[in-house]
Length: 407
Picture 1 (cartoon, rainbow, N blue to C red):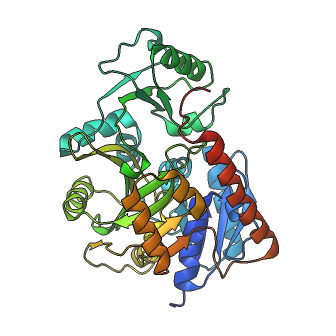
Picture 2 (cartoon, helix red, strand yellow):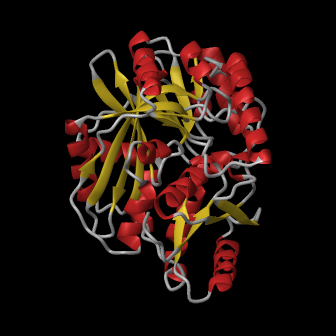
């Protein structure tokens, strides 16, 4: 274990934050501090991360900067490594990077590149430019959604173009992503969304057939010199199926695809990307090609699967931003079963027998990681919360599995 001479400051309080805190602790034996809009179970009662500030108005630029500046005064003379762990925090940091660079150590992209990649319509134009396939796509707005004509058949996917604005809106039966099976359901979903405070563009896509196990996730880290340091592919076993969690991965086995990795390396270096990047895609059984859904300008919520596979995300970040180390691209190639859900849920809801056999073999070999269950972060209340969390997942899958409509 290396001795660290910096302090991680993580933005957020969710399972992504806990995964990064665990990565820092495993690599350096240090505790992280977190600042967020609220507190979530993943980071409660922890010995490795402390949520120091909860500020409901943190998405206001002035409040964001003042909060971070005031917090830094507790650590005069110390090196603070700032790590945003959510879409909203990435956007805040990019917009305010010049006001924070003298206080915190971090690297991030320009606001121009952020807008090009974070808004789905413009991201799909980038995909076309670099030859990445994506689902057939159209869109609608609050002004024309009642007259939209679909150029493909049902079922269709409905999701927000602006994920931050959508996160902050409220309406009955809200889901992170919707699937409309027919025109009546399609109209009902659009009426519900645009009846809320969300008035931005909606993305409408053809539904790519196949179960959750057809999904792939790729996490990358690009150094401050705009060179790719790490690429790690994950093969999903299950996604979450709760309204707020649809599309988030719940169990992953690390994968490997040299051709896809090389293409992604070329893409990221061509656009001059810096920092963590996370790609969601699905292997289309109709033509055997990956269809790219979106790019998140951060490490993914499930990204601890990379660290669990032997490629510690915190080390790649610190080596770049703190220590200025440079090395060639590493393509992760070690397998482990990563999960945030009970094993019983995996084996009940995954139908692919080959994938279940892989999972059982990895468990037998001890290559099994439960993201929120860390032997060096045990305590009575944390254990109680973890047990309740796992029991709740069993209940959630029973109630919500396969339900992506407005009901």
